[in-house]
Image (cartoon, rainbow over all chains, first blue to last red; front, side, top):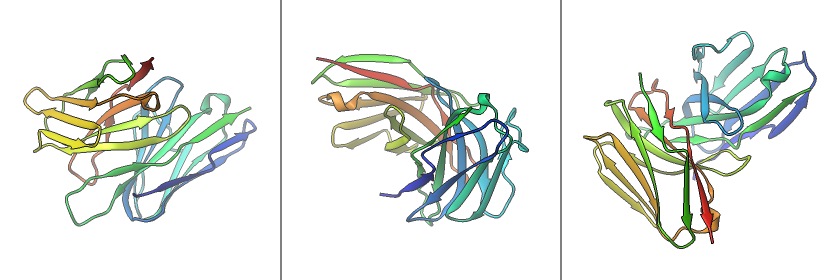
Length: 118
Length: 112
């Protein structure tokens, strides 16, 4: 089946530094990619929606200058957490919507990235 | 706004069937999904159903959709210990800009 790869799987960074997480669709083109964060024992919270070649749409309460999203191609989106702080520590998951001529609207998820800010 | 609700916990005996329920509010929903999340892992798409269907079966999984009541269920036959996970119900309307809305997830635990 379709595969979405996220990298890195886990990262530890110092407070104040920036961290970039990549999300790649390996065997399909993705019209839209989504970024979520998940706190322990909670559901996914949508952070932003990105369409290839255009600016990301951020959900209410998500700081766009802190969570920079770039969707440069139909197979790659990146999330950069700038000036990270301990409260940014979380599990970040991306998903990609398959670009297809048919009416399928299948969305596949990456494996997630654990971010720990110390 | 859109909302998806699930019960938080379900405990079943190994070998029994598990039924996880979900309700949603968006009448324009066109795709409804079930995802499985094991500890520390991403989400695995188990199955999805298009809104003009009322049932979909895939091996041990059966999805039932009652569009009138906006109720979705996932039945896992012959539940095994490997089925222990959190199951998320999700919905989206058909549009390239439509975001996917998740339920809170149901934690399924299997007892011997």
